Amino acid sequence: MAFVRTITYTFPYDKIEELQTGTDTWLRLVSAHKLIAQESLGMLDTGVWITQDSDGTVRVKSVTEWFSLEDMQAFATDPDVQMHEREITRLTSQPPAVEIFEVIG
Image (cartoon, rainbow, N blue to C red; front, side, top):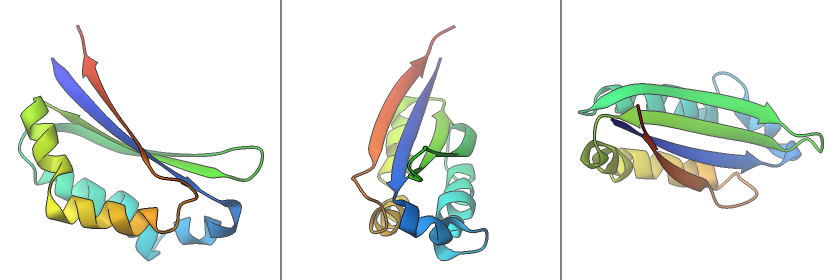
């Protein structure tokens, strides 16, 4: 079994430029997220998906898959992860949504 943690950020249309490749926000969402996850024990997979709603709102979903709940919790409470998540949240239109799933099968 594995465990998946997703965190979804919602950006208003006027913050789209913050998501351009190479910006501080992009580096936090993609590069730093991946680097910290890869250096953490028990990480199985990671990814980032970006979608845009018809009203221009952009949703960014960061996904990490973990061998155990303890590994996932260690990642989520890592001070670097928390700092990056706080900085990203400053630009969003609502608090991030965190979901935890268990992979069965």
